[in-house]
Image 1 (cartoon, protein in one colour):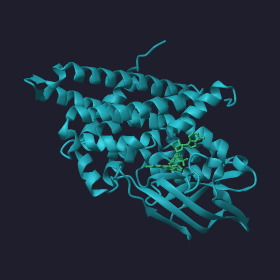
Image 2 (image 1 turned 90 degrees about the vertical axis):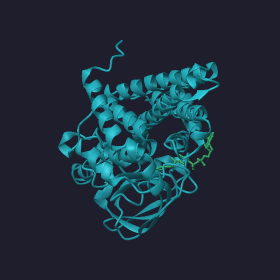
Image 3 (image 1 turned 120 degrees about the horizontal axis):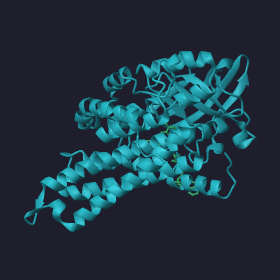
Image 4 (image 1 turned 90 degrees about the horizontal axis):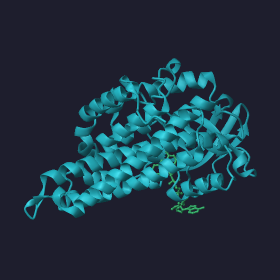
Length: 381
Ligand SMILES: Cc1cc2nc3c(=O)[nH]c(=O)nc-3n(C[C@H](O)[C@H](O)[C@H](O)COP(=O)(O)OP(=O)(O)OC[C@H]3O[C@@H](n4cnc5c(N)ncnc54)[C@H](O)[C@@H]3O)c2cc1C
């Protein structure tokens, strides 16, 4: 067993950190307040190969392993919880195309994301179907030369700014999860409309409700196999949950480091905060949770790189890292006292941004269900 990152990943961490501290960290407050998507930072990150870094070189990507992607995610979110995750989630639609798309689809849709020309998106959730994916109602009805899509999707990251979106729709409405397929849809096609949703955090993210009215999707825009969308999605989640775990880990590290620094500077009762045992205990617990989250995230990323993705471990990484990150930012804000509650410091933003981690990409309750199913032998992989 070797817990050493290795030279390649250590150099990656150092160079990504340098970029993130210079190009992301100073701008968090500004983007949080304006609510604008950080296009300029996306482009800069893309130039260095940090956007959708796992995309193979033949499609313009860095061809990075998943551990490398997790390191980038951690460093970006550490630098700033809002901008970091906005840039990282530009890759959201790519895995479905990369793993199940045709060569033409990959050649056409992956390079613009890698270059930072457009983010991508994946639309699963609907107003009446979130955790229960098989309950989606968006329909894809067969017509001459393709499909007609009708339905509403909600909470879709990048739904109103991406050039293209992967849409999950029912191709056989009577077959439950065996009747779902994935489609590539360009957002300027007739019948596609999107409206941005306001949220408590991640203000510079685009999160949208999407309306599909008789959107014609040509035959060759089906991704993978008809009625296999749910199975494709499970493969997608094995990786995306580790990625989200890495983002949440980064937010926890960012909040912890800021609180540690503050605890050394700020004095109460004639001594720095860090000399008070109650504060020391908080910091010790925060550090311990971060170390444990990192082990889970890195191990599940490493398993993906070995071709041995483990859905229970991917879920555990996402579950543990996101719950730990919520706890860590809570305590970090507490250490800042009244200043933590003010807009003067980054902590209140981290505290708001981190909260969604236990909800998106499958809630904590759903992650526990998946782990339990694997333990009971009901979910094989
Ligand atoms: C900022 C943001 C970005 C998002 N981005 C995307 C995106 O890009 N694409 C996309 O498709 N979706 C996206 N989502 C949607 C997200 O994935 C869903 O919100 C999430 O899956 C939960 O679904 P829901 O909100 O419908 O909650 P529900 O499924 O209605 O669940 C409500 C509560 O009930 C619990 N619950 C549900 N079923 C069970 C059960 N069987 N046992 C125990 N508890 C249960 C849940 O854990 C939760 O606590 C995003 C959401 C947010 C907030």
